[in-house]
Image 1 (cartoon, rainbow, N blue to C red):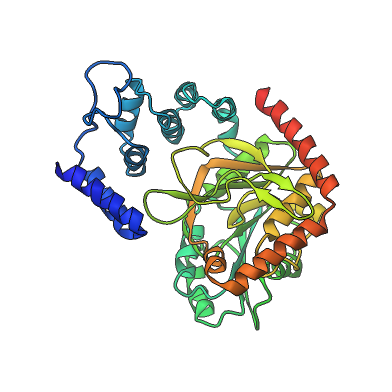
Image 2 (cartoon, rainbow, N blue to C red):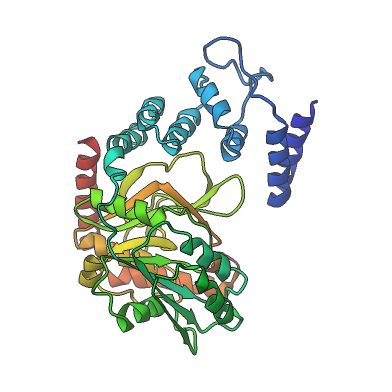
Length: 413
C-alpha cells in the first residue's frame, strides 16, 4: 500500500469516528501526495471499480476539485471517464475560468435534464450577467453585530475589501455582552475614507429582525437603489460580490433579491446555502430543499429563480423592500425570518435570484447554536409554526405553483 492509500485509509477512519478535522487533514495529505491522477492510456471509459489503478471515488474527485487540481479533473473528463460527478465538476471549473461555452458543453454529460438546462441557461446569459455597470447604483450596507468580538473584525475587513465604490455602511451592535462594540469601532476603519459610516449600540439585544428594522427605519434610505445585508461572522467574501449581484439583478426585470452560494470555512468546501425552494407548505409542515450541509462538487454553480436565498449576504431592490415591508419581529432571534420575508416577496410577484457563481464563506454562528441549544432549537420549532399559521396555505401553494410555471417557461426559453 502506497503513502497516498494510507492517507486515504486514515481519512476514512477518522471520518467514521466523526473527527472531521483529522479527516480533512489526511484527505489533504493524500491529495497533495498525488503527483498525477492515474489514467488509462488513450480514450475510453474507466474500467470497473475493482481496477485499483483506475478507481476514483467521489471523495477523491471532490478533493482534487477542492484543492484546485482543475487540470487533473478536466483531463479525466476529457478522457470520457464514466463518473457521475465529472460533468458537474468540469462545468463548474469552466464557469470559474470564464469559459461559458465549455461549461455548457461539459454540462451535456449531466443526466438530469433540469440540471443540464440550468447550466446551459447560465451560459446563454453569461454576457448579460457580466455587462459592466454604466454607473454604480447607490447601495446601503446593513450590518448587525452581536457577541462576535472574535469574528467581527474579519467580517468587516472582508466587506470593506469590495471593489465597489458607491455605498454607505449602517452598523449596530445588538446589545453584545463582549467586546464586539470596541472591536467594530476599530474595524470600520477598513472601509475607504469616502464611505459614510453610521454606527450605534443598542443597550440590549432586540433580535435580528428588529435590529435590521431599526437600521432600515431610523436612517433615510430613499437615495439607495439597493439595500445589502451582511452578517457579522463572514469569513471570506469575494471583492466583486456587490458588483456581480447588481449585475445579476439587472438581468431579471422582476428581481427583488439576489443571493449567492454560502460555504462553511475550510476544505473541502461544504455548502450550507445553495438553491432553496419550498417543497411543501401545509398547516403543519414546512419542507425546504437543500436543508442539509453538502460537499460542493459544482452542483449549485448556476443562476436560477428560487424561493429563498440565505440571508448572510444578499441584496434587495430598495423599492421592492419598501413595497413588501420590513422583517417580522415575531421570528426572533432570527430563525425563519428570511424565509418569511422572501415568501412575502414571492407572493407579491417578484423574483428571487440565486447566483451560485458568487460564493462566500461564513460561520453560521446562530444556526450552529440552535443545533446544540435546546432553548434555541425550541424557538426555531416555534417559529416554523408561526410561519405556517401566518400565511394561508392555499394562497401560498397557488403562488408557488404559478411561480414554478413561470420559472419553467423561463428555463426552457
